[in-house]
Length: 121
Image 1 (cartoon, rainbow, N blue to C red):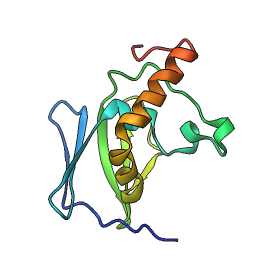
Image 2: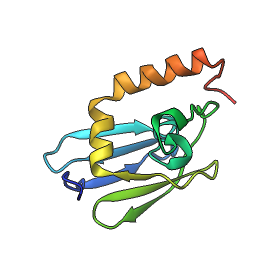
Image 3: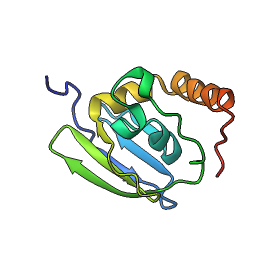
C-alpha cells in the first residue's frame, strides 16, 4: 500500500525552528507548529501499537525542529530538539493532519486537561 499524495514542492523550516511549512504541488500551503508535529507524531512511541496504547505527550510547547530527513519519495523524518526522531511523516499523514488540524489539536488539548498535563514543561 503506497502513499497516494504527491510530495510537496517545497519543505521549509522557519528561522526559529518552530514551524514546518509545506508548499503543495497545487500551490496550497500547509503549516504546522513543531509542538503539533511532536505531540501528534505518527511514531509508535506516541501512537502505540493500538489506540489504547496511545500516549498523550505534554510539556512540548517550546520544542523545535532540529532536522528534516527525507524517507524515500513518500515521507520525511522530523528530528526534534528533545531527541525524538522516530516519527515518519508521510505526505498522506501530513495531508490528513492539515485537513483535520483544528479537530486533532482540540482533542489533544482536551486529553491534556483530562490527564492533568500541561503544554509547558
